[in-house]
Length: 166
Image (cartoon, rainbow, N blue to C red; front, side):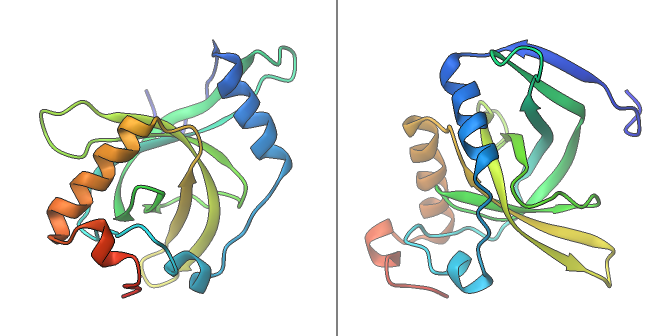
């Protein structure tokens, strides 16, 4: 598919997923850089391949969600069990709901979940945006996989990172 081409695909999702989108669409939360950096989960700063696309509720049928456009490939700037930050050539408004697909390691299953944009930073020199997100409907198993991956990469267990805000 051509990246510029916009297509909308309505998919019937479980009530819980559509409820998450409805609840999160009503509340726009923005985090300052200080709030974003004051986390209890450790972060990995190595780039990880991922894909994203915008998601919204179908105005004609609240049991459906609509995926807008094509999936955009990119890489993470950082990731934790709570959320991630990635590079985007497109400005995404704070409060946007995204479908995220993360490939932690080659050969492993990808992690798919919804995320909400909580902060956007423009990098004028590179003409890109840093998009900070927090996970919405990630399973506890997938959250644990990300946490274990980050701990392996940084070599510190979560307990040692709780007060580390580096």
